Picture 1 (cartoon, rainbow, N blue to C red):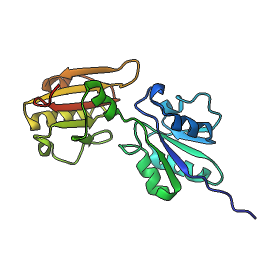
Picture 2 (cartoon, rainbow, N blue to C red):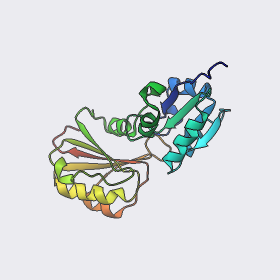
Picture 3 (tube, one colour):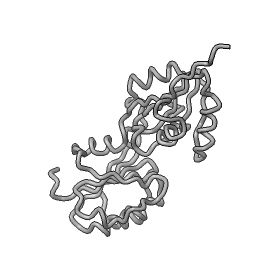
Length: 215
């Protein structure tokens, strides 16, 4: 009996949310997919696809089992937000199935979009993930860093962001970048006190830019 061919699992970065930021490489991968795995809003970017669609919620382990059950002979594309290398489902997929079994297609991250909106480079930026839980690192350790990007992703994260603002002290401009690339996109410069009281979108990046960084 001939062995069933195992195709590589494609992990595709779908950008910050707008279809305009889907790359041709991602679109081609989806066109050839037999199974699409990803968050509901990512699956909705491809209404024309006839592939089996598996929505991923909070239970990542369930998604990994679904991928494993369909690996033999199926062309699977895992859709992730932003870029696969930054706080995405790519890590558990690669950890489970191995780098050799996966092909990664990069995408535009929300961090890239946020810095682009301000016209700033981000080669010296420190990125902090507060998307699912508060960072373990002490906020005081970021004092003096010229550019800080915090992926918030949940309202509770703003308590930590407010602590960060107090810990690093004055001398920073603070920008809250919500729903980047989407119709409701909003980029606001805010004060420290706003971080603890205002409500923001869950699709959010907070930038701290030291005041001596040229505008």
